[in-house]
Image (cartoon, rainbow, N blue to C red; front, side, top):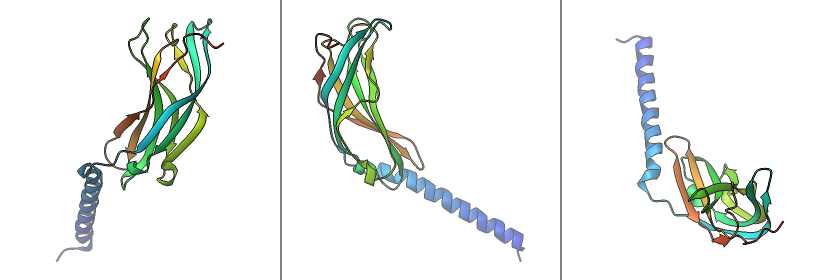
Length: 172
């Protein structure tokens, strides 16, 4: 007969193997179905100012956004957090072909908090262009997200919002 130590060793081996297989099933399960894309609307509500900063030799713009995003479809059994952020992309003819700046972000920890509604919310981070490339530039807004799972790899996605064109002249 087997001793108590041998029996405990066999039992713990089976338990660890079962937990390992369960973890693999949890990590693989979300990839077996295509999640529904969230309903997202992002647009510029107003422009506080567009100005030139001589000390930094750059353009700076400060905008307010309207964000209406139902990110609840992104939550499933393996989702721990969703990091949602809005980027503003624009072309600059003087130095860079494409610039992308994060202007707003939020960490969402529950399905209940995933219905994001922001009306005339001022951005956390202003748009800055090292040079004079913001005047008259078309700006494309994107709401992007990063899914942080309990087990497994990160997943990313995003939906484009409404385009906006900066004023041709400085407002300050």
